[in-house]
Length: 522
Image: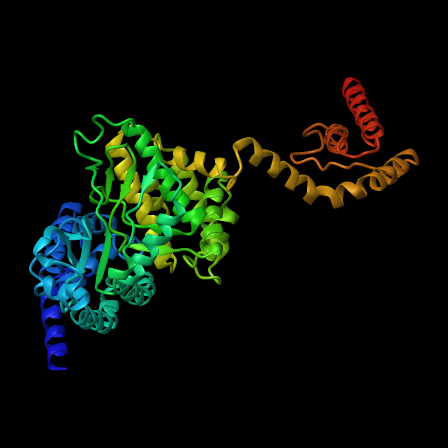
């Protein structure tokens, strides 16, 4: 227990200067004074120092920083950008000898003299080794890491109420939910049994697909601490010579990345959530090779449908459907003020339409920035999807600077029948309007018959009140209004099986003639 308290103290002391800096942003002299305006460059320098502190505090805090880099509901964009660099900057000196883990887990199954190191990360090492005459890859969890991570997660949970004191009311809602999300995501990454099962499922889903390659899993050699895989090699996608002597272009590979990740997430419901360049390669035969499935997720069918609904609402600029989708995804609370959120989302749509170029990153940034006045959160599954889109778009742009990520997404969704083409969407909206109008249309014939009967008897009178005196305006304007209304009604009635539009059109013509004749005599 003393170790836990000591860790609390270390973390508090390390982050106390940042807490004081944030307080001074709100009040120049901490407890009183005006609000300070801090330039972006100062925030970036502060974020870099926080990133360095996370690196010094070890793997759990590295992972917390990585998660925060995809949480725009908690941290501003400049901090998210800097924390995102933690993906490639990991401490190499945490934990003991990983060969001890291999000895405990595999015993004599593996000849450790054949081990060769390949890579090291914040949570694991990767080796290759000889096994039954072939080379395999071994991902080994750092020794003694899980108790350390669990201790640090307890520290994070204990500090949440303290952090809430320095956060705005809106951020407090997200922070309270985020601590549990940190624990779920980090502990999932430590469970190599889970990672192996997801790899196997994705590999099975793409077994007959010659566009992509997923390493096979040696289940007999794998455990919670060791993941044994097929050893596959390829050129890193962003290397200068990545596409030399292969039958695929960078643009085609970018399109393939979009299609493969959308198929994983929205069709199969299980996806690799870490598509940064270090985890993607192109094989000698031109296939996309995926590595490192520690950050991955399974989506329920309902969540898949809600994600598609969110994109459909964005494509159609339908604010009501957009609010529904955000509530369904637990981004917004069900009792949120829909009218206020709707007005904000209308501004989001207007701002995006006014831009020369719209990207996935700009949509997410605009959406989260405008929603900051409401309590909202990013659930873990949605957070990982946002990460896939943001990181994946960046990789595609590295392959082809002119690549239209959103166009590729839309083309896939249309091809899979998940959303409609523009023409289909227009026809569906028109038919929906007609369906909503059917009750009124059904009553139109009797209402027009009644109106014509009253007109014949001289009981129908149209009165217009002059605004600026008795001679202001056109006293015969009512006939023109009736003619226009009846013309619109005739157009609507063309959908009816019976030719009701003919007498209505005749009436419209009559009112128009009356209007023209009376104008000539006045």
